[in-house]
Length: 95
Image (tube, rainbow, N blue to C red; front, side, top):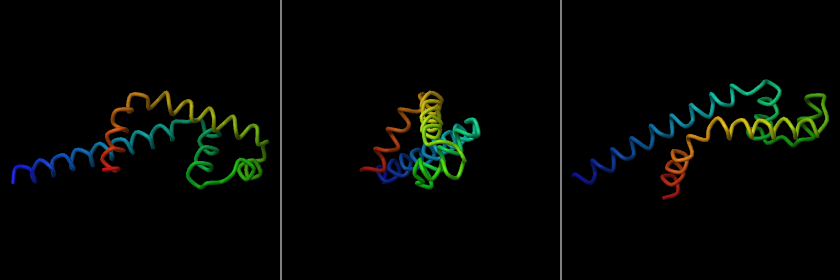
């Protein structure tokens, strides 16, 4: 009984951590400059190519590459303090 309760508690904590992580990532993405956010979201979440994004946005592929690079850099900086939480969440999914 004790082990089942502990396992449930651990699962609840992991679920909470994952929710908090998701919330922080969403907030960080929303805080990006609009042009960076649009390019990043189109590439990472809708799986559009740089070429497709460039055509949709009316800018060069090089500009899109720069925007995605800068978005990634800003997100990495903004979310650096979550590294431990990210690792815990990944480990809980993998096991």
